[in-house]
Length: 284
Image 1: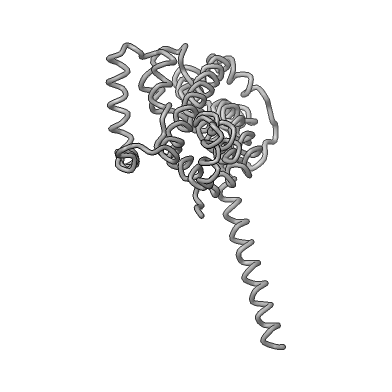
Image 2: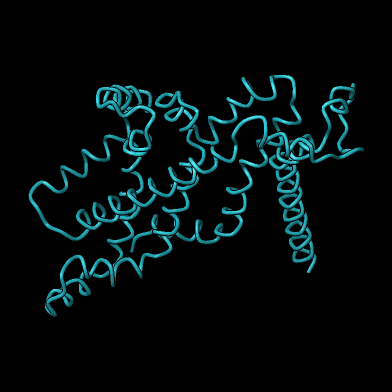
């Protein structure tokens, strides 16, 4: 009995230590976000007069959020980002779903070699891909266009691999039975495979939306016309030509506004994201 009691006490102590560690780690991770939101509610004079940083806003103001939309055309940046995100994600889904279906269900000569070559592309540094894409888009006179922004982002080897692995978990008997009934490959894909693999498709969609919303390097390279700036580029534009480098509260307000859609999206679909990733990474 003493052994059982000591074992139970050790288990409770270990569980309490794990919870304590997770709580401390959670504070460490969330503190920058809290500090960003807190700073956005401080006035410029109040922020600069703090010799010792304060962890609460003694005189909160919404003026920084008003300035975020007036110093630069932030609403236009939001619209550009929405167009870029929706179109890129839609085209990417079509390319990814069809490619994953071809590699998982269709039989053609050299399929395994082609897929291996596809996977090998993931080892190429992104910097080399960016340089190649920049030269190509420039030669095609597609700078400062939505087409130039979208085209290099419509294919993803990782998402094709993730969806292919998910498709391969569907029993082959379903595909053979559908072919016996005269069902076309496209109809089988749309009516059978996609509904079964919906969690993974939703996960891929959400991850692509987040990727597009946070895109910075490529839009910065391919656009120098303010009419095509995205919100990520808008942050730099705000800093250079909007508030200036010293108005940190106004800058934080703009960052909060830009980050809020992604935070809400993740909170709503976080369970689907985790289930989709786990489903795509499990076979058998």
